[in-house]
Structure formats: structure tokens, C-alpha cells
Length: 376
Image (cartoon, rainbow, N blue to C red; front, side):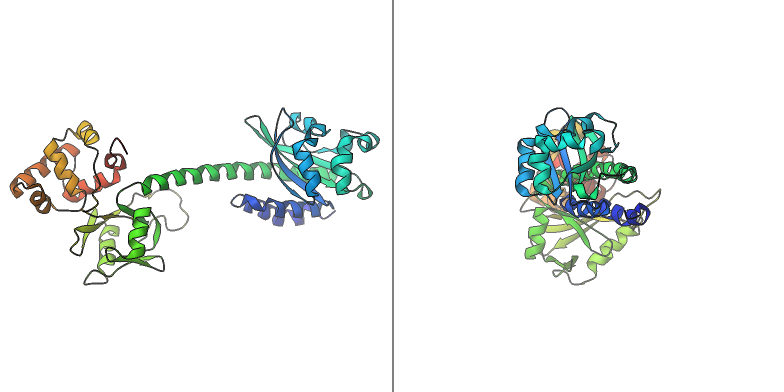
């Protein structure tokens, strides 16, 4: 048998790659089977009490016999109960469960092992949760002999690593599902939003932003994954806005986009600046909002009234301010005097605890719940 010390690094590396790409489990199983001079291997998710296979990865099995095992023959498996009830991570070798003579006469051997040219097996259940268990099995022909104590110990060496990979995969699946839910929520926002680095490299964007940047609707687009502007006099205006934010000269930067009434709002995204980080943790990201007065982001009046006790007039003004308009432009659209508009703005800022219009706009944009109407 190949020395496990020399084989382990490559196999462990291959195993942990399965964390992000579980569909490639057969690749690892194939390498593991080679280590044990075996032709077949399986990784199965089964019920701990009933003979049910929920999911499996296999290599070397005849498709027909594998399908038969999963649909009906699992109930005849003489190893299933011992593996499911034994200590977690303990590897069992087939001869410790059933004699060669009895196994050769068993229906499990005739329907599953014999069609695949196998006789001996060893395996372990390395993870149990919610009434289900994950187990791995290695199988080989009779002429290659039963599995030795050394081989059992070698498979036990991999058992805790298998458990960690499965748990990491579960965490990553949970994280990815959370990200998908967040993306769906962002796609429902009536304005474009995306995140980028200080070099204008865009990390992610919602559907509204993707449409706008793909069609250059507002004079903004992407070139090699970086934000670019075609509607401004200076091609460096975006870099200048980012520089002010990253150097903490400003909390929010706003750029009017042509004569459409649309604007681009940039604000520094929150990042932790303490502790250990890998990569560019100390480089602040930029959160961008693409706002269009023709497609207003309706604030939730009930929510704003409850939280900040805004009057109906103050709510109407805030609804215009969140689109990127200044107080004079909003006052004109509301058909109130600039003095009245400034008085209402001062009241809004006092109630919300901010002291600048840019900070107010930033607060409203980052409070996504305020932008959802009750019926949305």
C-alpha cells in the first residue's frame, strides 16, 4: 500500500477543493480508491433509521446495480446498521461484521457486490445530523484480500477531514443562499445600486444597475469591469469623487448625469479596520446609487413617521431629496419657497440626527426598509 504520509497532502488538497465544488466528489473518491487498490468507492447520505438513500456519489459502480441498491437493496445491506449505530468516524471492515461464507450467500453480495466484481469493503459514517448520516465506503475484489488494520487506520485518518469538508460545504451553501436572497431583495429596489473598489472595479450590482450600465442609459457604463463615465466633461470626475471618499474628505459624493434629473451618489461602505485581515481589508469600498427622478424610490411614509415623527410635508421633501435633488430643486417641484424647503430640511435633519443633507441622503439610501411601501 502506498505510504499515507506521502499520499495525504495531495488527497487532502483534493478533498478540500470539494468544499466549493461538491459535484467533483467522484474525483476524490477515485484517488482514494486507488490508494486502497480498490475499483469502487461511494459517498452516501442516508437515513439513520430507515433504509433510504437521499443522495450519493460513486465511482466504478455499474449504473444498474447502483440504482438498484439506492431504490431497494439498501435494506439488505448487512453493514448499514452497524455503521449507522457505531462510533462516529470509526472505520469498520466487512469481515468484522460478517464472515466471508455468509456474505457470499447474502442477497446483498449477489445484487450489488458481485455485479461490480467486489467482495471486501470498509467504511465509516463521519457525519450525523437531523436523522441523516454521511458515510464513505471503499470496496475491492476478493483476490486482493481483505482490508488490513493499516488500511483501516488510513481511512480513519481522513474521517475528521471528511466531516470538516461536509460542514464547510453546508456553511457555504447557507451563505450562498443568504447572498441569493440579498440579491433578490436588491433587485426589487427601484434604483441601481452597486459596490466597487477605489479603482472603480465593480464587485456586484443589482438588476436596475446592470440594465443601466449595460445600455449606458445615463452616460455610465462598464469597461473591463470598471465604472466609466461618458457624460461628464472630465473623465477623472469619478476618480476624484472616490478619492474624496477614501481620504475621508467627504461622506457622500453626488454627480448630476446630464439633463435627465438622474444622479450618481457615492458613499463609503462600512468596513472593519481592526483585527487580522487577508487582502485589501484596509482599502475602503464604495457603495453607489444610481437615482432617477423619473423612477422615484418611494419612501415608506408610515415607517418614517413612526421612527422620526416626520410631518407629511417633511416626508414629501425627503422623498425628493433621496433621489439626489438639492433642497432648491425639490422645493421648486413641491411648489414651495426655498425658505420653506430649507426650514423643513432643518427640521428633518434635527429629527433624524444628522447635520448635513448628504448625511441625510446617505442614511435614507442605506435604510432599505424605508424605501419599501407596505404593499411591495
